[in-house]
Image 1 (cartoon, chains in turn purple, yellow):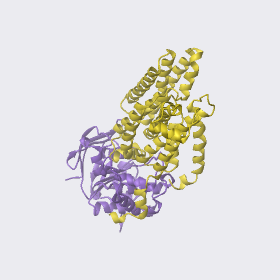
Image 2: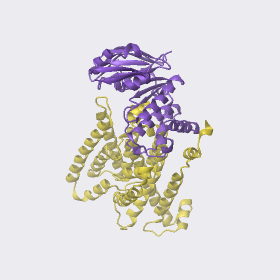
Image 3: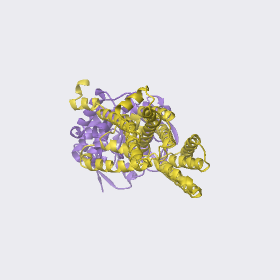
Image 4: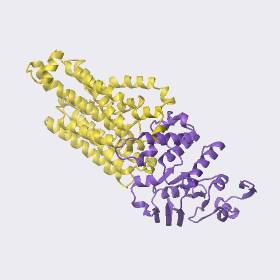
Length: 255
Length: 341
């Protein structure tokens, strides 16, 4: 059964169509990439898939159950979101922030257990933040904050990970480290991934399903070979692009 | 999995709420000091005899009938305000929020001043203050809810504007009142415990409210990371925010009914605890209640004794004690809060 299935989904933001009649199935092991121009509605679509934005029409089902009718706590055990940005109004440590990922798994009056803490610490180690676990979140750099977001998501341990520009603020080494880490979640952990990205080269390297939003409600989705072609990408970005075939895979260069 | 937890981790989970124990001691100490001070000289023997209830000496009666209710009222009021302040700060995601920012106290003050203007009894005064507070709370709730979206911004703006409206009404009532009533009105506005009796209902609201607030502690912790993140982590944000608003308003209304507009406790007590490194609301909320209660008991003891037999409005003392204490903590914590949260 698909982790998440959209049927005839209509999404719009401020009256502008994002997608009209989208059918989408995210299966275990899938790594979807959502591409589109600025303002095409990639983030809105991602929030819709997470049940945080109400679609204009169509249905979403989470492992067979209607998403809109499920309690938030149940959804949070299945779907985790890495948001584009974070606002921390109050001080919190890195470890405390990662531990928030356990919230949907704990009973209303239950305290975090040693096992929860171990999960958070493992996740922090996986994103190279173990040494900073007692630091105030406000003192982290943009890239460190991003990795903390990924660690929180790993601590939440949902079956479907929705990520809004996970490589933002990351240096080249960390971009590869984090996407490898997330890729393993899909490959070995049987998780589903859906990533909003702007970097075509990272996208072609890590993702196996692509959804192109053209900004007018029109869209296209499918495998890399079917969708990631020069005419499609040029139409989407309204910018000429060249594809160079390298031994490690195709490379896209804007003209 | 259990073996994965490092010693640091165990310490983190097992961190005994040592601060809570210290705060309980502080509360007991402040209460005893309050019971011992006053115009009638009191020793330990008198206090013990009075509390045991087997003495009918003047001192024992003064302690039982006057000082004990007053001390209890001060503690309850301070605890209510500090808890409400901590809740309001999370609700509005604004560290500058206090229990009065959304106008609850303005409604209460308008009710109380009206009762004074018409020369009503203390019971009516309390009723009018509580009624005014509830009216203001529901008014803001309905107005902020209006079009359905209930953002912090909209709630804050609605509350601040309603509070300004009450402010104008209060000014009008003060201007329209005969001179002999002005003094007690001003005292009420500055916060004054001399109207307060034994706070039975207040203590009930405090206990119930605090238990609910502590039960909401973990969702509140998640909410401090932002509404969107909280929703993605499984918190039903709109329901939680409505509940927190009603709870904080009810606690504030009860406090204001007991003792008028006592400023500052609700703003700085939660901050002091945050500066001391408390962030988990499951501990922060009871700690705020204890510290807020103690602070107000100390302030009220001073308000009764400094210019005895004249009494000062306790609201003046909370600020006089709170401002330097807060600045000292801010100064002390300026380095470490940047490096370590």
